[in-house]
Amino acid sequence: MTELASKSIGRPVSFDRTSTIEAATNLYWQSGVAATSFNEVSRALGVSKPTLYRYFGDEDGLVSAAIEHYVSQRTLYADLLGATGDIRTDLNAWFDKQIDDLYEKHADASMPTGCLLMECVQLGNAIGEKSRATVHQAVQGILDMFEERLKAAEAAGQLRPGIDLNAAVRLVAGQTIIAKNVVLIGEPKENLKRMVALAIDGITA
Image (cartoon, rainbow, N blue to C red):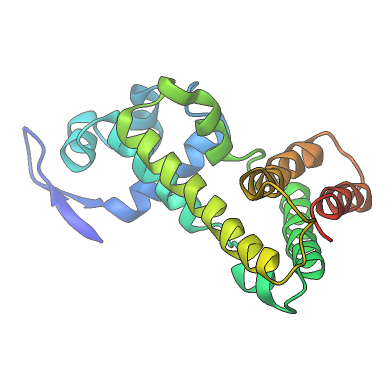
């Protein structure tokens, strides 16, 4: 969406909010949110700070918009979680796809490494209130996705008897974080898939 952003002096200039968010997302992802000041964002994007304040409210508003954009570009493949109806098969298929994507992106030198969402999770209160709320919503969405599928699996008798469902959801979701870090240290892809499969075996009947 292109709008007009007025300078204090001179003619109005064109401002594209979407492309600004995309550029800010790439900058934060490449350089790190904590390591990138608002002044650096303004210089790198070629957008004045008053314009950024006008359209995003403050630095927290821009970071929040960048996180939201980053999350919107990630494909969750939720359909794979119910593809066969067998939880062990479906979870392994889901992680196989995610892991394949991770290694493909890691091999692309033009792609930033790491995970912007996980960085913001780790930053905690070092990011603003809006950004924390956006992070919480994104993480909760992932947990809800796994919880819905694991509840169905439990009802079908496909999980270990007496399993703590809350812990199982977080164990499975946690494998996504482990996977992202294992990719960065250069572990072979098939080793990572076997590690995840062991975690899945631990919760399934």
